[in-house]
Every structure is written in structure tokens, then in C-alpha cells.
Amino acid sequence: MSGKLYWVGYLVIFLGLACKDVPESDLGTYDPTPYELKIPTNYPPIFIPKGNPLTEKGVQLGKKLFFDPVISFNGQFSCATCHQPQNAFSDTLTFSKGIQGHFMAMNTMPLFNIGYYQRYSWTGKINTIELDIDVTIEELHNGWESLLLKLNSDKNYPALFYQAFGKTPITQDLVEKSLAQYVRSIISFETRFDSIVSGMITPTALEMRGYELFFTEEGDCFHCHVDPLFTNTGFHNNALDVIEKMHPGFESVTGLELDRGKFKVPSLRNLAYTAPYMHDGRFKTLKEVIDFYSEGLQYSPYADSNMKNLHKGGIQISEDDKTALIAFLMTLTDKKLPEKYVSP
Amino acid sequence: MKYIFPINSLALFFLLLTFTACEKKSDTGDLTINLVQNIAGKPLIINEWVYQSPAGHPYKLRRLQKIYSDFELINTEGVSIPFSMKHYFELGRTETKNFVLKNIPAGTYNKIRFVFGLNEARNKDNAYPDELDMINFKWPTALGGGYHYMRFEVTADSMGSGKIKDFNLHTGATYGNQNYLNITLEMEDMVVDGNNHSMDLIMDLNEWLQNPYVYNFETFGFGIMGNQDAQEVLKANGVTVFSVKGPFPENEFNHLK
Image (cartoon, rainbow over all chains, first blue to last red; front, side, top):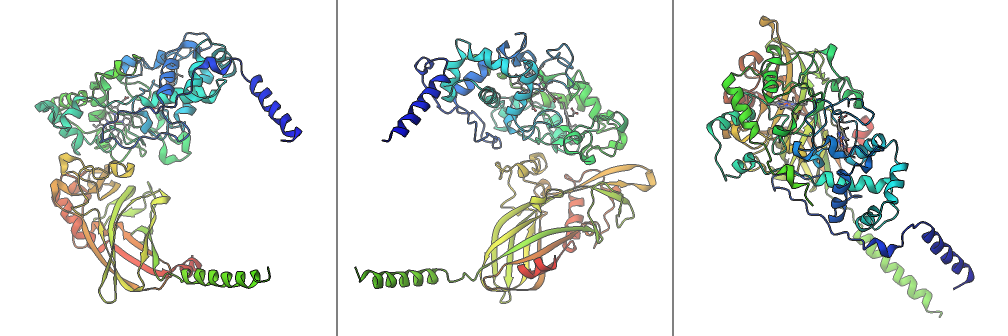
């Protein structure tokens, strides 16, 4: 080997050492064992980006970060402050309070089955979960640099990140990746509805009537709230407002007038936990939501053509049928969700 | 060393020979089918009051999604070449506008046949669990199961009542009734001999609303997924909905565009 190459070698080793605060041996070993998602066979394919496959260590680390207030500059906010496991990873407020003391502009979204979406936030303004985390932490921590300093000098995190990603030091990219892995791992499916569909149990007459309303053009809910996820993962205008009061919604992302007042179609799984409802949390109860779909639709030319009887205010169903529809929606409750993704 | 030159030349000669032999042009060809829509000859625009139904109602188009499947090309000897496939179209999504029938054997073809919608064998509950467009096109089990064939949605001025109402013409296998259409169309002779072609498959949406029966939005109302009578009317009218332009040899067609 020539002298020149020795120098390059020294330089590489030197630079390598300079980058490390902790000797690698103390960080444990890199373990990329894949994380196996438990997904029912009738679910569509989930989107997992090539650059961020789920691993056991990655998901575990993401979970730790999710519940750790270290991600806020004042140590008072974690993701779980707003995305509470007992509420299907949303909260019970119309608008959660942000770290600066102001209210958030939109109702906090639940976080389950979200690896099926192609866009994030109510208006779809964010393209990936990683990016969503990027902007959230930017706000919660007044920027990334100070958070990375904190994490890199922590006594546990450098090792956990090394074991999950085989890399050190901790970077913004790795924080986003681990949190995104955890959030993607939250899959909800163990409900009464799923047991009915698989023939394990029979529905009550009331639930059956609700099912019929939901899945026929009598109630016409299924065109947007498509099973098994109970969302078509798209954006629609469900006639919440007249033009004068309408939030631009998806139009603010696409710039197309046709997209005015469109919001992400939320999953109807776990409604028992996700009140209040809609992007602005305007309805406190499911009864209020059903009253809206039955008599409260607001006319505008932007309302989706699947909003039945827009000209008469809605589907016009009896009080008994409203009870039935709610009974059916309650079969979509995953009672195990609150604990399933919390305990280590 | 002096022998190397001639031996190499010989090897080179054989090598070239093998290549030319392998390169013998294949005589099959592809046909690109462009899905083209109009309403009584007018181009499609979403959400504009520019159309009139045969029953006399002014209307605007809100949504158009549909499935074509199992194409066949029939040659002048009456032999059919089948293509086992399905294609989902959605107005506004460019990538769904056309598709290609590949490796058509050499010959002269003068008819095209296809299924509008899905035949019974294809149209099973959850038959396409991995395709997002198909998942969102499901026809509920409570209404017979399978998938929609078409969603043709309009907002119409219902006249008389003075109301603006939405009408969703969704076709499918209502309670298991097979409402898909088998369409056969004559086309210009397509001579396939290693060359590609392209053609327009045209749908006039107003033809769903007439010939032989005038379809009055008000008669059948907002939704018809559980209404086999309405499905029968659309099925009967569907026969005259389609026409073709072409096929054109691909280069010539491109030149015309």
C-alpha cells in the first residue's frame, strides 16, 4: 500500500472518532429484526416507505419517545398529551391546547390505521407521517437543534437509537423515523363488527338495522366510509357548511375550487373514544352527528354528490333508525386498543 | 500469433449471424385504447351547467368512474383473441385514461368486444383486496356484493319542484342480478404485423338516458343501487352508449394529434 493511502485511512479513523461522543461498544448491538404487523387478511395493503421499514427496536424506541415529554422545550408536552391511548390516541377536547398556550386550529386526530392514508392532517397538507412529526416537533421544541443536543447527551437514548438504526449520533431523521414506525404499528381491528363479519357472533336486530342503513343508499354512508377501514382514505365535502362559512379544506392544498370544503374522511372505527367529532370538533355526541346527516346538511354546490337529499337537509331517518345507526357504529369499537400499544 | 486475426473474424461473423437471427422482428403488435367521453357530443367538464338530459332536465356532471374488462379482438376469420384483464377509469385521473392490449398476434382484426363492468366470475365480494380503487368501488354485500360497474353522478335541475337535486346512477349486480354489458363493436380493419395501433373507445353519457327508454332522474330518484328496474333501463340503454374511432397505426395517429 502506498503512503498516501495510509494517510486517507488515518483520516477516516480520525474523523470517525471525532464524530463519536460514546464508544460504540457501550451502545449495544444494532438489531434490525423486522417488526411484524398484526393485520387482518381483509385489510388493504398498508404503505410502509422503503426507507423506513418497521423493526422491533425502532417501534419500541418510537413508543418510548411518543410518551416522553423530552420532545417539548418545557418538558410538559409529549405526543400522548394530545394523542391519548385511552381515547384512541386523540383527546376529548374540541381543540387541544398547544405549547404556546394557544388552541390548535383543528380537532386532534386519532392515530390508528393511519399507515393506510396517503396524506396527513385534516386538509391533507402533509405528505408523510415523518413530515408530520417534523413540523410537530419543530413547534413543540422551538426547533430541532436543542432537542438533538438533549437526546444525544441523554444516558439512554444514544444506545437505543444505535440499536434501532445502527447509527450515531441521533439525528432529526432518526427521531422522525422511530416515531413514525410506532405510529404505523398502531392497527385497530378487534371489534364486534369484525367478529360479526367473520361469522363468530350474530348482531342484534338493532345493529342489523343500523348496518342496513349504513350499507345501502337509505343512509348512504358506505360510499365514503368504506369498510373495512371505514374510510376511503380520500377527501370529501360532507355538507357541513354553507359557502360563506366554509373552510377551504383540501382546496388550500390543491388550489382547485372543486376541492373546496373537502376534509379527510375519518375512519368510523373507535367513535366511542373520539368525540368530539369533525375537523373542528363541532359535534359533542354521535347523536348530534346523526341528526346532522339526517336533517342538518347545508346546501352548497361543493357538497359531495353522495350527500343524500342535500336539498332537504339529509337522509331523513326516524328516531328509531338513528338509534339503530348509532348501535351499528358502536360495533366498531376496539376495546383492546387503549392498552394494546402502551404497555411494553 | 498470425492465426488469431482470421479466427477472431470468423467468430465475429458467427456472433453477428446469431444476433441478426435473434433480432428477427416479432410480428405481434400492441393496441392502446383511449377512453374518451362526451355528453351529446360536448366534452366533459365537472360541475358546470352545460348539459341537458333527454328527459329535458338541465344537469351538471359530478363524478364518473367505471370499469371495463375482458376485451377480445376478433379477426376477419371470426377468431377471437381474448385478454383477461380489467381497467378502472376515473374522470380527472390521467393515468386511468388509457390502457394497452399487448402482444396481439399478426392478422387483420375488424371487431372489438368487451364487458362493461365485471362478469359474474370476477364480480365476487372482496375479489380485489389489494387494489385501493377497487376497494373504494365495492358494492355492499347488503346489496348483492361485488363491485360497482359505474358511478355516473349528476346534479340536476328537477324542474317542476324547482329543486336542485343529486342523482347517483350507480350500476352493479343489484341483489345478484347480472347487469354487466357484453358489447361488440365493428371497427376499421386493423392489420397487425409487428406494428402498434391506437384507438378511441367513446362513451356518450346521454345515451345511458335514452334509446330505447328515456331515463327520468325524478322517476328513479337519488340512488338506484337497490332498484333493479332502474338497473334494467340503464342496461337496455347501455347498448348504444359506445362507439369507436380507429384503430390507427400508432405513428400515423401520433402524427394526426
